[in-house]
Image (tube, rainbow, N blue to C red; front, side, top):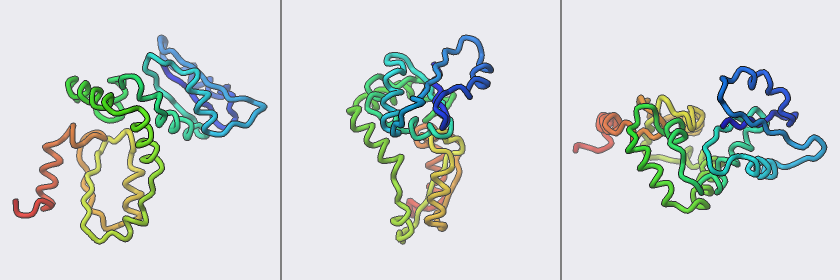
Length: 199
């Protein structure tokens, strides 16, 4: 299922051109917000969580204003109470070449952690700002940057470089979970940079 969250108008009406172009067979739910009542982002997220599927995977597409709503939903404990869908892990963290066994192991590992703990960690990661710490850092920093990071894109790297232009960055072909999906490439790069010393 695709769940569409509206722009600032909150009606969802302006999403019709996009919905009309979706292939047949795709179940779509367009969310609308109250037209006569102001709700905070937190209240909107709770409202959306009340209508999305509980036992089947879904994809959220959030337009403009609703971006923070999608982030709050992604960081909600309810999202972690069921087994993480393989398609979501493959799309966000891994890629099409990731073996099913690795996907399954990731699902098992995530399920080991309490939902509230996972949700809080995700909220912290979305709101973290360590620019002042980076600016004052005097040690060498080598950053491995996945070329196909669907989860964070390149915004995080731009933020790092803005805070600390001297960070050494190396792009590696692969998804967000680069150490799991391209371990040999990561090790080769780290060895080449000399971070392991003479070993």
